[in-house]
Length: 336
Image 1 (cartoon, rainbow, N blue to C red):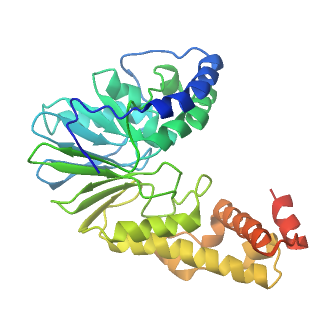
Image 2 (spheres, one colour):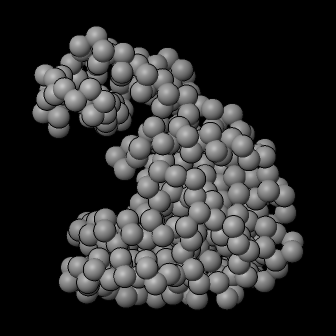
């Protein structure tokens, strides 16, 4: 743990830069990035409602893109998640209605487009993007190619560029001006390998990014659900009254229990089906978690990609544990 004066903090490390150089060369070869100072138009409506959770601590819930938060320090503002480019400018507008202090930091909870692709909207006005070292690596390896590919269909991408985080941390970085204190924490591989959260110990508020969401937003494509369960265990040890998720409505600490229960029951139920010799199609047709539908309004079998992800992971782990390649294992991977 270290306390960082954000005005002078720069957590780049030489060993990380050596790892990044090779990836940066590939990214630069992908094509020139288009630079723009502002977005002048938006692709879709943005109906974000702003709630002041505590003095100087705000939450903006959105039905498109991700939710955002911001914390007003004595001399600057720290934003939680950049959002898509088209939404980022509206987030900035909302922030300016709550304070005249400059935005100095935007924290990417992870590399996905709805959380990081709007970085340049902030950095073009003097802010610095903050993220875990792993988040930056994933942004370079996966985010930049996706950004370039999606420019074809997204006008907001064509009017900006993807700015990389330059203030990096491994497991923890603290912003503290004597009044406000925000701890950015990495607890392990959850929704992505580079997930981090923003914790305000004084206010007992946790901005979770997509490590915890409220509703059927649990995308598992980049996840490790076994590790995700353990990450939530670590989050539960924090003193929390309010959970501000990356998607969905404000909640209390009970949301951590719901998110964790989903993965525990999904993994356990699928493992039972595997033990009983059920095929992928049979599992998808019959799996049922009543609590999940009550919580999210969506039957668990509708989240086919999550079922497949957990099933394939379980098949692979079973093979590693037993050393036997079974017919079920082959069927699992053939289904993709």
